[in-house]
Image (tube, rainbow, N blue to C red; front, side, top):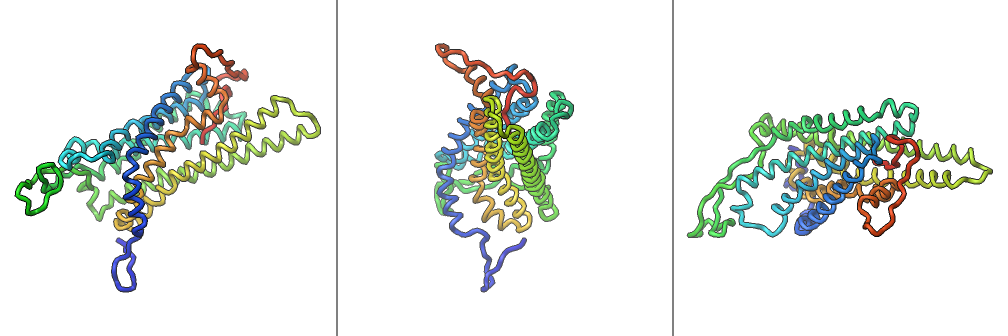
Length: 376
């Protein structure tokens, strides 16, 4: 384990007291903030699924978005009881560390990682599909057809749980003997009413501790590099190329229409291109802010050892959680902002009866270009 030393030979913490104060302050609010995000995100993803599965919204892109909404919904629903258990007004320690809750916390770590990995898989897949649609439109139907899209989604839901196998093996429930008072909280050693009881916590398994925590290191390498950093790099490259392709298309269109009056249809198409470009940049930035720091922190935890993990990674756990939750909850807002088809279909489904029925946009190319939703 690498530990930085000061001039007097003592240990130096990787992260100072400022991070500890921030962690202690934000932790008190995290439970309420995460619950608010999860409730909004759960409702939003249910609405996403309801709209995207409509027949008029049928397209490979929207099938991927539906799979993404399902994964994000599972992340939201699973985090609600975890937030209530960990961060809301505390129950006695005897109840908080029961075997049942320890089992739930262990399952939370596994399920949330699997669902989030599926979400990343589908996000990168969608970026690939959109890049092919823009850069190779003549091959789009062949390469990105409905059957192939469904197969890729199913592969994601099968492969991602397998990718997280090191996580399953690295942790287990471990009993601990604790001295508690009558209220079920920590007692003073000389207390006459204190008694010993068994508490259950999630800790490294024997397999995780073997060979100098080799399995734990493998878990962090998979988590940081394979699940986080590589998708971030791939998504950055794909998004930048997609944006360049969109801008190049816009420049060619301007050359063709220079000196002539633009039609309303052409002007709307240009505005759609501009909106899509801005949204691609926004989604890319949000994804990188969420995933890339987690990957870097996970990699540093392997390289610098347990001291960095305790001093820095653990102190930023709630911040990384809320960023991931926001990333899973915000898609509904993005779809409404960038897709007229999505807004129209949503209003048809959920409008009050006394409002007129909006006209659903149909460009004559059902299944592939009905919707202009773009997510990367």
